[in-house]
Amino acid sequence: MSAIATIPTTRKALLPLIRVAVCTVLFDLLFWERLPGLNFALFNLLISGFLVQRYTWRGLSNAARWSLLASVVAGTMVYIHDSLIAIFASIVTLGAATAFAHEPRLRSLFVAGLQGAANFLLTPVKAVSRLDRLAPAKGAPRSGLRWMKLGVLPAALLLLFTQLYRAGNPKFDALTAGFMNGLFEFFEDFFAEVLTEHMLFMVFGAVLCGALVLHVVPDAVVRMEQGWKDALVRTRIRSPHWMAPRSMDPLERERRMGMILLVAVNLLLAVVNAIDIDWVWFGFEVPLDFSLKQFVHEGTWMLIISMLLSMFLLMYLFRRNQNFYLRSKGLKMLAIAWVMQNFILGISVFLRNYHYISFHGLAYKRVGVIVFLVLVLVGLITLYIKIRDRKSLFYLARVNGWAAFIMLVGLSTVDWDSAIVRFNLAHWNQGEIDVDNYLAMSDKVLPLLYANIDKVEAQMAKHSQNAVRWVDHLDIQDFRRALDAKRGSFDARYVNAHWQESSLADRRTARALSALGEGPSQ
Image (cartoon, rainbow, N blue to C red; front, top):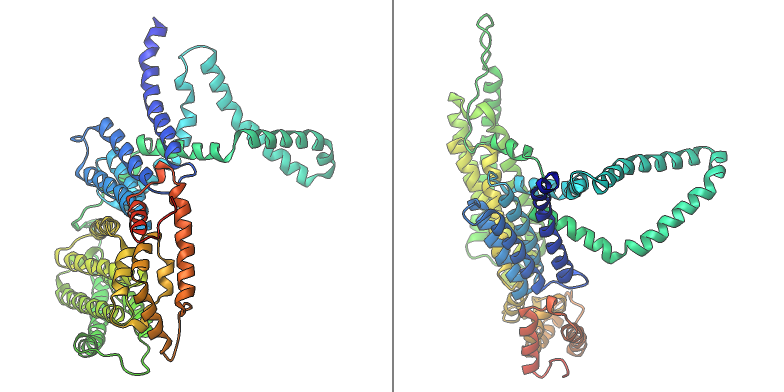
């Protein structure tokens, strides 16, 4: 009877192990010595299927459902576009989806990140601690596992102290040299034979799969988040009746300091905004001997940093009881005015970047500035809501985290390499386009460059007439040879690619090159 009674427990313990084992085998099949491609889409679908099968679609929170859909979209975009941003989005969205699925009470992405990291770190610890549950309740297997667990730590500590004593005592070192050297040789041979690169990859895959499909982390992180609310709540600290009432002097001094500071910076920023509106917003032209690069690169980032500092300062001023102080209405009005002025400054920064793109063309950093600026402007809007409606810092982190999440998924849906090359090939200012950057793009742009080689040559010719030449490729034949070498690398990779690495982007590229007579030799 006792043996029969142990069967459900053993089966219950084996079921998660089976899930992890299946996931690990498929992870190894999809990713070992394979480049990104179809494998990301399939793996995201696999983990999504495991989670839905375990919790059911109705059992998942709204955050988990949207994150799972986002992970499927991002994984699919890896297959469609084969871009770095899609790969990054696929990893981030899958991690968020598993954290929200395992813990439906989670609300914010940064806490979900903590939960996922803790789950990953604790998975191998939990696996080792529960090894003996896989064996029958009684008998040699379970006893053997228990003794093995008990013996590992003492053996490791004994080895550590032996090495310390050998280092500190030459005679003891000579006494134990033969045994210890033989032991280390044994371990070296053992690790060389057993712990190969592939085996270590499998171990990593097992830990990763365990963290994705199992929930082993305690709910301490979630309970911590449960205490954080979107709306600020005033907590009164009541003094004993026999004590004098607390003074409002510290809060009043802070209010006055904030008023003086906000009046000064509002006036300062008003001057900056007036200059930018007159100079940058309407009829902007690049003067002679004017460094547009300094104007955008250094000037833009300085202004973005100033906006971030403004946000941190306002978050500091409007913390705790200052939000509920009856005399802080004027401070709030000045703070809201500063937020609005920073929003105007953000528009000016966007226009600086726009003018730079209209003069020099598109590049990843210029797209990145726009993306970062949009997130900063969203942060300013949420900061305005925080001050107006007495919202908490948790509200800011939660809303802005989801804004960045949505932005990341949206970015993964665009083939940025092709979009940048198309824009630059059609650019009016041919002499200011970075033709070297064409060769730094991914293989997806090869058909575009071959089909528009005459435009590249025209851009080189225009750049050769500039007083300052800052590109390396000014000879179309050299550019063509570099392009052919890039195509040759693509041909070799495409012909030898495994099915796990296949992508729609590579297929489109090969088809377009073949139509142009530049495809891989058949």
